[in-house]
Image 1: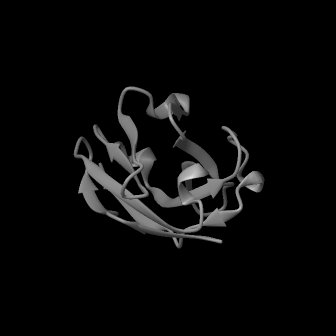
Image 2 (image 1 turned 90 degrees about the vertical axis):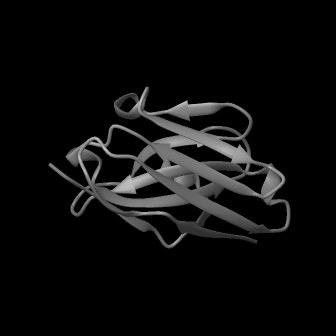
Image 3 (image 1 turned 60 degrees about the horizontal axis):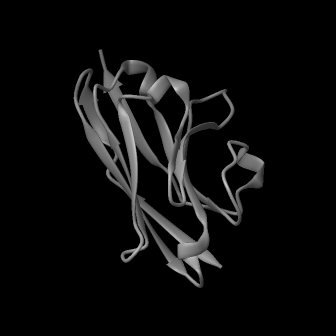
Length: 120
């Protein structure tokens, strides 16, 4: 079992920055591919970024978001810069065994989500 705890969401103006954190606990958390997804009401979960040892990003956040991982602290960070109103969503941390996938159904463990709201 892996438990995930997110923090760092909030309400900001367009152009601002936020950093999300996801602390993983449980057996072998270090071996899991960790990712951030986001969801707006009425839409499906969207892969944002993920990493085990190297990062992956969806096109809409490339150059603005940076995912990093502190393996010693079992924590994954999502540094978000130049935020846009369309980044508004609930952001979820997720973990899966194996390698990269953007398919949310393949992720075994999920955090509770943290709201990010970007005002124009």
